[in-house]
Image 1 (cartoon, rainbow, N blue to C red):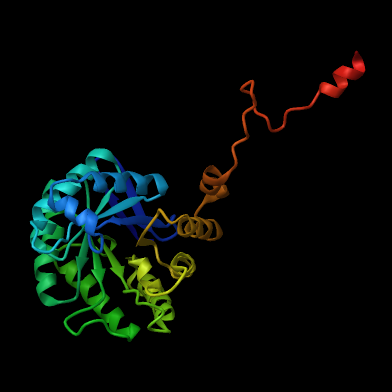
Image 2 (tube, one colour; image 1 turned 45 degrees about the horizontal axis):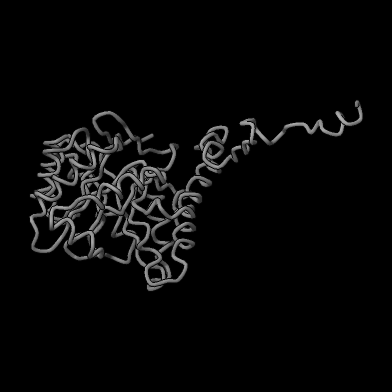
Amino acid sequence: MTDTIISSATKEVVIGFDRPFVIIGERINPTGRKIMAAEMMAGDYSRVIADALAQVEAGAHMLDVNAGIPLADEPGMLAKAIQLVQGVTDVPISIDSSIVAALEAGLAVYKGKALVNSVTGEEDRLETVLPLVKKYGAAVVAISNDETGISQDPDVRFAVAKKIVERAADYGIPACDVVVDPLVMPIGAINQAGVQVMRLVHRLRTELKVNTTCGASNVSFGLPERNGINAGFLTMAMASGMTSAITNPLHAEVVRAIMAADVMMGHDPDCARWIRKFREVPAMGADGEMARGRRDTSNRRRRES
């Protein structure tokens, strides 16, 4: 069993085999969100805070925080966003940037053990990101591509992931602190994209014994009814061994599918989490008593009189 422990100052989340699936909220990301980007550039982080609270309320166990805006002070903005998010919620954070200086700025202010998103198999990324992960005692997302790009061959992607895990070990980072992203491609463009990921996730779990994650919404890019595709993909990925995903918890259909898969895989003992979330609360009567289950005694009273 491999457990990846991520924490805030007060709360731990464990990504692991035979544990409930971990939902990492994706919405704190200005990429493709012009209003959020403009607000953050102007120093207004109210939407960041609102998205953090809404995602946690909807069921996110962690939050991915990204501040990637062209020509902006990404290190400063990412650090600010992380501090604000940690000020309003206790869930752990995935610090998301392709800029090493921004990753370090975020790690420097983060309270707890963060998940760094991400490192690839490219030599320059390995040599700059992995020392940061070790320095701050973080865990890291390992994306299975390298200088040659993203291979369509799952065996090549596995080899890249294995290389990253081995290089992490050279820096003193254990395999339990490496969460591999097998790279989910759009199923509308690559017909075998889903099958490739399922096979690769199974190998990563059984051979490398590492936890996995992905950007789940990539699979449905360009298709109608994307939430249906995302939900179907995630349940199958979970059955293949995937242990977490970066996705949108505001899509109830996706969260419901994940929770149902946890039930079916025995990761929700006695269906307790499912019942707690979806059990109907009996309506209250005008007198404040539970309406459901109350006996109607009016006819008996009339008969007795």
